Length: 133
Image (tube, rainbow, N blue to C red; front, side, top):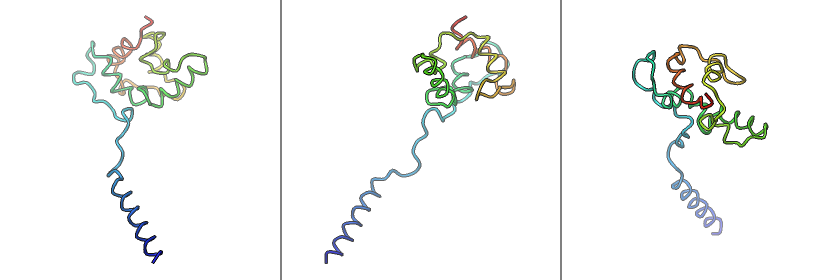
């Protein structure tokens, strides 16, 4: 009799746990979702740097992305606050430096060709991030 009660209790507990389990895969974190690229001519000047940055660079360089995590570690090892790992928080980046790193690559970041991001798009992103001049 005790065995039957134990089996029934175990079945009831497993059924309750199964009923509370979420269905389907968990939602993706924001840094894993790629933003839609802005509409319009990719070669035209005057594009929106923030939306281009989010669409073209955000997968790695928004909060939680691999690039942000690596840069945060580097900044902390250099004695800087972890907030400097997020490129949008940096005040020491120049537009020319951003363009050079994007085209040439640096560390774990591969170089980006003019097919990946056009010169007009890169100019807009560099203007958005390049707060040091």
